[in-house]
Amino acid sequence: MHGIYDFMAWRGSLEKGAACGERERLENWLS
Image 1 (cartoon, rainbow, N blue to C red):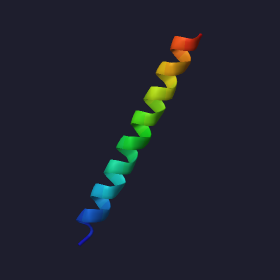
Image 2: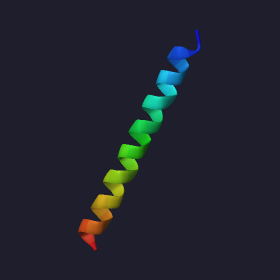
Image 3: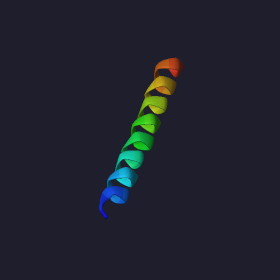
């Protein structure tokens, strides 16, 4: 029953990665 935790961790890392990408893109656009 650890599959749900794997999924949550994967989703969390995906959201974190997307947030990092957005911030990077915003900084590139502002500079």
